[in-house]
Image (cartoon, rainbow, N blue to C red; front, top):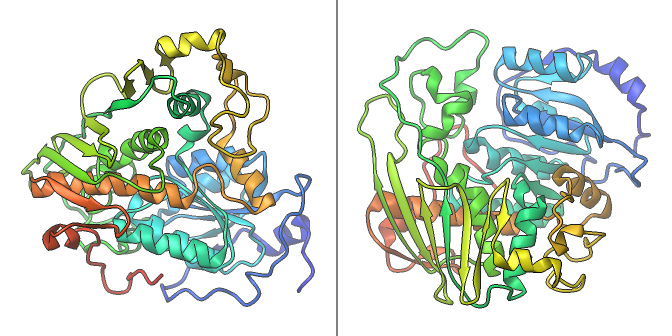
Length: 440
């Protein structure tokens, strides 16, 4: 093994030059899997960040207490320049993420790109021997989740998904209370997301000189450049995302399945309703939508696009409401006199340090990026691991499929396919553009 370079010698060698070249099938560098990794919390990570507009920059900032950002990648040269100005102009910059992954000095990669690039980048990073923090939703399709799970299992990489509500004391305590029986047998969970944004038609124009439109599109169909397809507003195009059902649903359905103990399984029946816009060259995710997911034990999870955003769980002996600002309900009030025992229904193994929130005091919120760092050192699964987040994303995807097909569907969570419905099963994957086919 080559000796590990110091940060100073690396920065001198990197020089901050822009590196970019054409796409090619990814091949992990020799020795990448065996490269020395940090041994203790005194060692800082060497990080690469892919996708730096919006959430990519957010997670990069969250990682700064734990590591040094030595490589940056974005297909928008203006976004990349701003990121270098913020995170250090000595960090090496790339347009093509595959060139970033060739670096043998990286411990981990942070992925903050649009949804349609999550699976290829995550799988390639694992093959290159990198641990990964990937934004949610984990996937664009159900089949991508299967391929990611296989790649992570075979590479033995640590992967944290950005469903950080699992690290928020409110959501975690709510789930622990439900699983400890504090509301009795669960009857129903109601999730309120938000309305999908509507708009269009939008004008097709030449892509900006600083923006690699072909590379941004990746596996999706090649179409004329429309500015509203890119950056934050990619969420409202079916080609690249799933609207609020995958954007917010990846958070809230994950919490619902965590409460129900279904984080390694999923619903058995889905019925979705939606009205879709008919605007040429406009946003094309549902205008109005709702979905009902039924689980094997009879519990129904209803997803709505209007109302008070959050998760309401109702049981035979009470109910709890939780969102990012509130945890409420009589069972929560009762915690002051009847706290959850330390050993009772902790949802993350030995990560059960002093937690005042278990008695209703909600001061403690564990750092989601910090959990990733801890797990990278310990070589164990983080709190938002791939297995659970594949299932959470799957629940979102099958709900969207039911909406589009306008009918009730039966789902086999063990086989991970629809029962007796070949048309629905064809929606579990999508055609991929030549040159961008995912090979797990």
